[in-house]
Length: 382
Image 1 (spheres, one colour):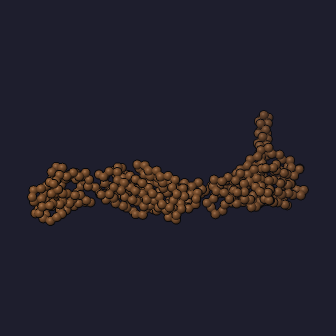
Image 2 (cartoon, rainbow, N blue to C red):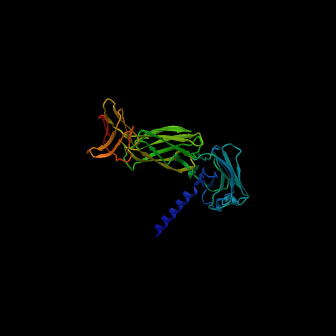
Image 3 (cartoon, rainbow, N blue to C red):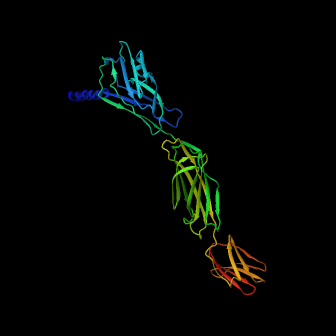
């Protein structure tokens, strides 16, 4: 039983010494540079002070960087300084040094509250650090019995709490575009809306395909950014990214050229765009995103033809087969599949002979143009 009591007393003694030998500057408020109030609050504490410690006065200088923080007032509410008849008083006459002092006349103060607190304005950005130092040994009245051997100093730092903005981001000029059967590429316009024009702002514009159909349909060929300073552009098989270091116009724009991967491809692709704010201290979170449908028409390609000295010709254009003859009389234009089954047939005495193929399923066909003089032209159509 006696051994247990001794261990307990020793343990309490060690704990008390560790708590009372530390002078600590605490940063009490995290500064949000995106808010309207960019103020900070810090306190200086000595732990628990007893009346027997005879604390009656203090005079402490704290070093700081005035380009980042600016002290404005010393506070006594909720501190030991509230028990003093004079102080705390803040003096910032010396550059980069705040001097705080206070005193009582022949009456000690006691308690576990901070000695004093100081508030001020934060002048830096979210990456700035307001370092606090003790350039001189703190001065207390001569009768003060408390001694400290450890100094712990916080720094005044800041964060940026981004606020979502549904009107900031990007928006395509159109909801859908069509690449005709004769086109190899199409241009898509994207507006960048309500982006910060601050020189320190940076953004990443990301394009990606939602490949719900054949992934070999289209690819991004090139990107041109207007109204921004562009650091780099990266194009991959599945999308692209543009890195913007500064916005110089109110509504910049991105032009994206989408190219058909194969002239035999057709279908529909969806292109999505999103803007990411890459700024270290950005305060806006762009949330406006958009998508655009790209329709790729079935092209008429891979044409081979056999004619009689150009007496009969067949040409292909968007959704049509056109036959021409130099001979008069009846002309017959016939479309057959690979099994020889007749799919369409037109007989006419006029020129040109036009056959619509937009309602024909994709595949390979034979086209034959027969003129009245017996001349024919054969064509393989995919």
